[in-house]
Length: 313
Ligand code: AVI
Image (cartoon, rainbow, N blue to C red; front, side):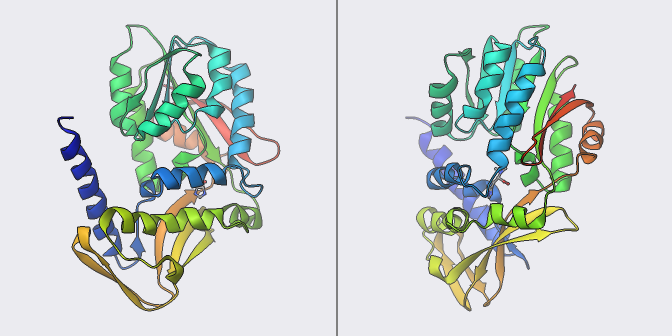
């Protein structure tokens, strides 16, 4: 297939560059988007079933509620990060759009989503990063056709505050008056519950986190010994976020051939792999305004504090 190799090669080069940049910082870090290779995505699916991780179940309940309330005037529904597509079904059933466009970098996720949702509307998936995909989806619409953009499940919480503000303003820039965004925010809850959600006793979240090092071994030829690392989740109250880290159990050095780099870690030193920000409900309308949206309303789950909110462009 012409072009396939350069794309694969450049993805590997981008991954190697990100690993080199992140592990060269004083506080070592790795971008959380790399948690989601095939195994990582399967482990994330397993996380969503954990009794301690109420976020996805709360999201499904909030989405079912909002599906009953939103006006069915959007001909085109576009979703950022489709995942398996399961929680989107009530929205498609209620709003009956003509076109549904999930955007995801994973062809496998888009295929799963097609199997789940392909029957509810014309299925037009886009395999791309969020903003590129939204730009393509917005260009495909007919004049006057209103677009409803979905960004469910508090994935926005995985952005740091400045990237979040910039991203939300960019979304607004790609939408037109009459369009709307449904966006999910996991809310602040007792610290014990938040920590349990990211450090479950079954060890599924630990496996999800450690798989990032395993992925570097597989794809970049590195020799991380996974047993030399420990999964850590901590709540940073000032920044309102759960941080996931991988803590080195020993002084060690690890060669990463494809990044042309050897990583030195001291015992107790950590690699920061993900932030998951939590929000106060009062922060949500402020974020909407700052990004150029009008906050319309929100649906909060009764059991697990999480809000899905509707922002008008
Ligand atoms: C995808 N995202 C909203 C999840 C979260 O809760 O931040 C990712 C996750 N990381 C560990 N558990 C779940």
